[in-house]
Image (cartoon, rainbow, N blue to C red; front, top):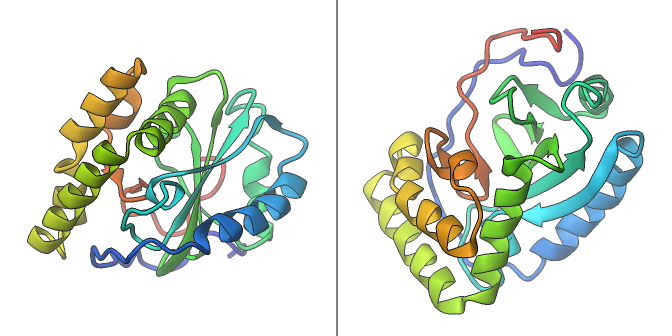
Length: 207
């Protein structure tokens, strides 16, 4: 089994939040330098720190979300094997919108990576949601309060936790002028990222 393939059963982590860590931006920058090297042949929209760890002051799950903008999913498909070789784990989640990765492992996630077309709704909406919360501390505080309430209510039900945030995210995207369909319609938006389905054991990059 190649490194970075789904060779173990998926283990769902409990929903838990931690206080904002001022070290998160530096952690993003360190990983972004490495990803910039690995993804250089395909990057067209740069690398961006997104999700709640990118919003100063609010509690989040301690997973750094990184968004990479590429020309197209098809053109960037070779990056899947490149990243897997470097220890990133790939899951065939929302393959119409992005290539989804995590590291160092599905059982202990420190980073999520979303490789998405830089001209697409998914890419624009992730940035729009982050920017709106950065610019509106009151709205960010409301989001934090909602997450804490949901985490207490659904500590072992990640789907219910993410579903509970959908209306808030949709409203923020509408206020920001972004299209809401990528982040808050049928998609379940997790804290700091997107939750993939349970992966198929041994999924190949050709699926």
